[in-house]
Length: 393
Image 1 (tube, rainbow, N blue to C red):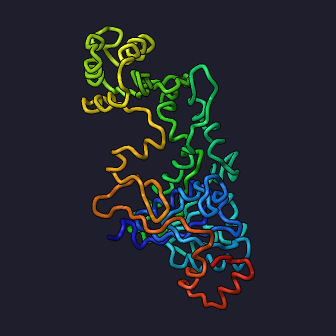
Image 2 (image 1 turned 45 degrees about the vertical axis):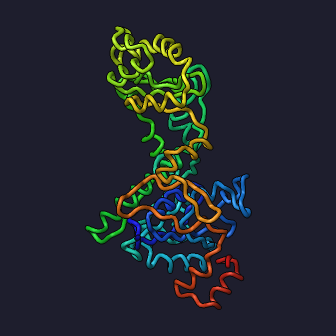
Image 3 (image 1 turned 30 degrees about the vertical axis):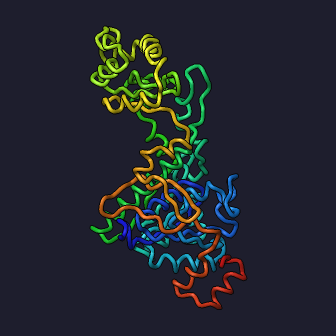
């Protein structure tokens, strides 16, 4: 069955994570993605261990459903090949340093928009082109620090801590997908492409809810609260006899059901805990009561029991346990293509579901095949390969 984006051709010049994660999502839903790497390859191929056949897991996790070619775009001959690829492309995704395409004489406003009027050009960058930081390189952890995200992550009495996943890169990739699809939808009306952008700083600040909202209203800088929520209680990690559980009690009805489940129904009518506002003000006293009530419970079993009673809760699992849990299996969240294993697309469609057709490719494995499809003869392909402009098979 054709995917939702079947017929959409994407030329992906991006490297590392934000751009490749975006194009993997597009590819999962049927887009034809041609990944163009520089002659030295996407650097994440070396970001390991672990490795499989010389390619790091980091690369494998963001580059399925793509054909991999290599071009030296710093050379005019390489840019000529790119121009031929773009003749039939719908989308161009790149994360070069701002100004690189202009330096090469193929900037969007100057060249691409006129030559390819239906092309949607998506740039992923650290800070965009304008402002004091415009054009400078951005990296996930550095933007976590400068966006305020790191300042609210960590224990209350400890130092700020980097969020343990590259959340800014991943969110930027998702925002790039949204921007591209918005532009595709608008193109149905106008017949014209446009320039779209997703930046790390923009995405990081958009992720900072509710801390930005709290600051706008109160004028008070947020503080670190460990695993606890600044606006809701109980909304924190609690120990049990076995493994910790995270309680995410969002309203008074859930709190009443939770109190009944732990055998302490009177807590829901205690004036200190009657409303969420009361519970936030008296969170330390509430925590002491709940820790005592949970001390003898089997965390994993009790978390399921609470979920069944309408109380949001989850047992603390390791990554290995999370991937192997029955719910993940039921949802088909693990993808296998030959020896490759990965996590499925989080966007599910009933009639045109995602599909997993191509495992992440070896460096430049598809160069010759793609060039043939775009009209290059064998002599031309050999010349491009021998000159180093288009290395590969």
